[in-house]
Image (cartoon, rainbow, N blue to C red; front, side, top):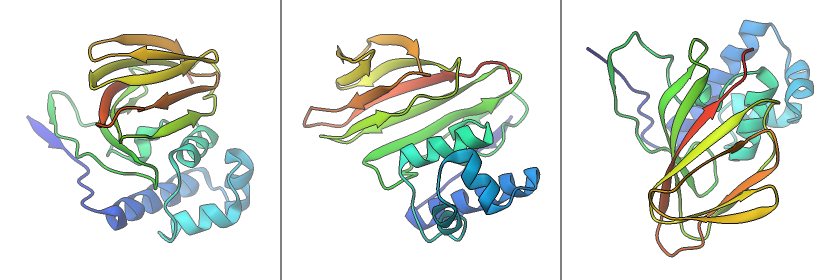
Length: 193
């Protein structure tokens, strides 16, 4: 049995990992910074800062970059999947400057079409998410605390154990109005590419 783990101990390590992955994606496609900026909607200057490890992007910026490259967000957070079976021990990371911790449990696998991420929102945190690519579907299961989830303009109150599925290709949002952190599993399914 193998163990896969991208163990990013601090914000500098996370920034370095993001920088390496962004550079590798650009190199794989043969894209200039200008071409990457056009595809992602993120400025050339910001992409350059991320690649040099000088800037920690927001989660929204990471989503735009992933969408522009046509990859899953977990591609920035977790090493490529190993052959099963494997034990996953994903550290809780702060991949961006937001008050959100993410633990990528299973990176996107094109054979399966999904990624699974554990998300923890710190008290008072709200995240408005831009629509993902057409056909993306999200599944949310609250594992600790309570979560407010905005779908179709309405905020739904979810308690521990509640689950919901919604189209991720529309605007949506996540909010922790409680005084304690809340955690949820986010299974994101991508249409066949």
